[in-house]
Length: 232
Image 1: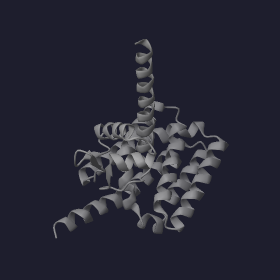
Image 2: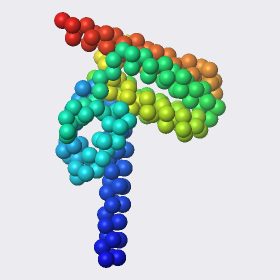
Image 3: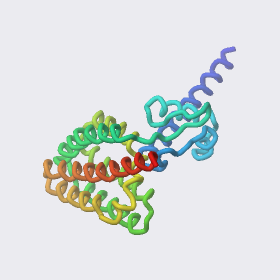
Image 4: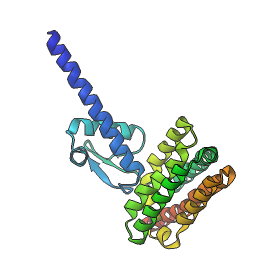
């Protein structure tokens, strides 16, 4: 009986670890904009994508649905939510406050290694934009932002910021192709790297806040265009 109990406990621990791993991977994909708003996900599809069984995939979906990152449209199907204008505005105002603070605090802890990492990430973003690979650009864009935020040394603040990206990440697809053509984000990122190199907190905060504001203006227009189309 003791052996059976130990075996059951081991199986449960393995299942929990797999569930945690599935949650982290699926969450990261949502944050980085792998899935567009309105994209449907099934337990089976997530299990196949993550090369796991359906149990940890279901656990990951349930956790992300409880956090508002996914919405159930059926017993086995979830949808990446489409944010309306009010949600976009609220998320943006919160991002400006939290990401602005993290950026300003990060400036005093900038290192040459961090600056070189940001430059390398920006090169990857630029190449992806030039080639029209917007999903790839979004993937590296998330890493660019969080490389700065993590420098703040405020892990709870970074966690709060990540929760906002969990909601806004899919909508960032709507930045393109305009953002790629006009190079809004590229210039903001270049200014951020320059400010970090100079340990200039206010300038770094301004660069990252401008990046958020420029993005919001495009996302708001996309929301308005979608609302108008639904009335036709």
